[in-house]
Structures are given as C-alpha cells and as structure tokens.
Image: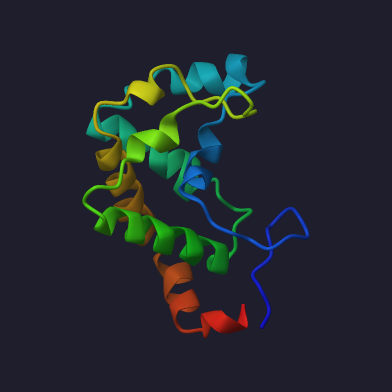
Length: 140
C-alpha cells in the first residue's frame, strides 16, 4: 500500500485541521499578510467567507486533489463530533513558528469558522473532491 506523500517533504502526509490555518500564518510576514488580514473581522460571517475564499480556496495550489480530499474528510469527521473543541486549534503554541492574526485565538465561534471552511471547500474544490472520491484511497 502506498501512502499519500506530503506536498513539500518526502514523508507521509497526515492531514491535520491546523493545515487549514497555514495560509493565515503571519510569522515573518506581519507587515504584508498580517496587515492585510487585520482588515477583516474573523467574527463576521462575510469577512470569514472572503478570507476562506481568498486564502484557502484560491491559494491552496500546492495541494493536489488527494490532499484536498484528505483534509476535507478530517474536517468532516471533526464537525460530526458535537463536542469537538475547535478553539484548541487556534491556540498559539510557544514553540510554534506559526502565528495567527491578533484575536483569532479568542474567536467567538471557532466551530462556525470551520463549518464555513467545510462548506466553502466543498463548493470551491468540488471537482477535485469528486475526482478523489472516484479513486480507491488505499492506493494513495
């Protein structure tokens, strides 16, 4: 059985919900990306949708259709758990090189943010998700 490989490394790809936050990482980009993201209010549905479309749907070109399906599948599973605490994904770890925009770790409704990601990726990546669903995932 082959394992899906990471898009940048020669290691196995193990999708994590945190990967959806990668496009919003302002570490060492505070004056460019950070300033752009500060114009949005993550607690407003319209702003969230604009951010997700611009930074996840449109800019995730490094992910192929299999990576996208794997990510959407783990997000779907997490959303099916009523008790899943999405706020833990937003907590900044001191040893991490990932920095989210100010205030994201105290987002009013992290579940709604991830529900929006799920809804919009299902729409924006529809063709890729369909293509991947027609394959035997054990062959990846």
